[in-house]
Length: 261
Ligand code: MF3
Ligand code: CO
Image 1 (cartoon, rainbow, N blue to C red):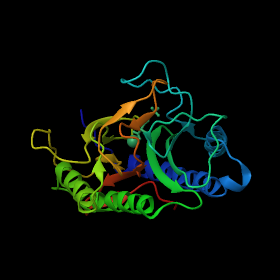
Image 2 (image 1 turned 135 degrees about the vertical axis):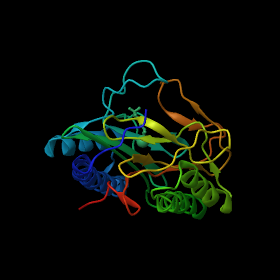
Image 3 (image 1 turned 30 degrees about the vertical axis):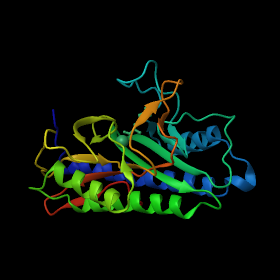
Image 4 (image 1 turned 90 degrees about the horizontal axis):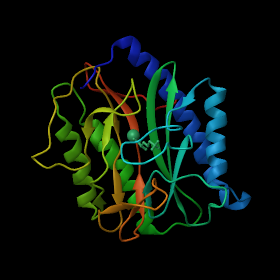
């Protein structure tokens, strides 16, 4: 069931989203200096956990019981490197190295309300094609968000994102979707990043809060789960990128909630 948030609730989501954006900026900055200082993906998670505790929030991924996996997610942060698409498990044995693309994804519960954000950070010298993949995925997120207004539909968001991928010859991951967010980490509706006319569509209304999260691959779209039960990788081992914002539908259009205030 799709649940709309009132203005007071959106204000709380704005406060949490701003904190999450600041935390992600700090973690991303740590990634950028990782090669010089030998940072493991577990240390990135520890930084995220420390910053979340400092602002008085809770990590919404930690302890998360996902429909698709046994057990609970053990960390605050997902760190997905290169051919890993999403849900990479932080590990002390994995060091960030020159040329890596580092996907960071984090959910924050703040004063009872959930926001969700992701970005992919290039480390050191990264190839032109990889940089273009990052730029295009981030642009696609913005083109999707710009569609948002009362009366528009989920399909308008999906089509705008898909168009950006296809224009640049990248593929859209199909097995994973964006989602409603706010009262929980994941709510209805689903927000696909491509459109098929058999999908259930929904008209956008003020108070609807969505996590929009395109995942694009340099190669083909199929992905698969690794033996750890969490990490999703591209089947052809090509590089992948992921960007995500939590966005509210407003009377006039939209407001990105995961923005530093
Ligand atoms: N990254 C997913 C999203 O943005 C959620 C992952 S939940 C986890 O919707 F707990 F599995 F990490
Ligand atoms: Co999400």
